[in-house]
Image (cartoon, rainbow, N blue to C red; front, side, top):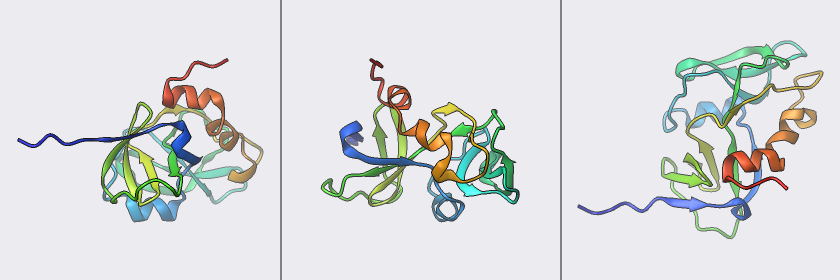
Length: 150
């Protein structure tokens, strides 16, 4: 029986960490495992203070949840450096300690939530949200890569 080698990537292989948009989730949901908690997308919800969320079994709730809702998870999408070899969609890989699935040749999506966190902020604008700042922080990197915070 042939042994399968799982590719692993470290912090220096990543150029960006983000959340998927609802359009990106719709394109890749058939190759990514579902997770049994609510988790955030970066797309805004219907109200100024709601962000879109994915519920149990992968259903998108475009109306969203309030950005201060603290019972939702983060499933990050990792963007790889251009100089790395291209990967095949659906291929299993690891980012640090996190099992992930390749969704495009340069983007990898966590197979489960890394942590619970509020979307945060006064509106549903992902670019100015505290959650964007958090997923690019050393605290978040410590969760993913097991690195000690200094």
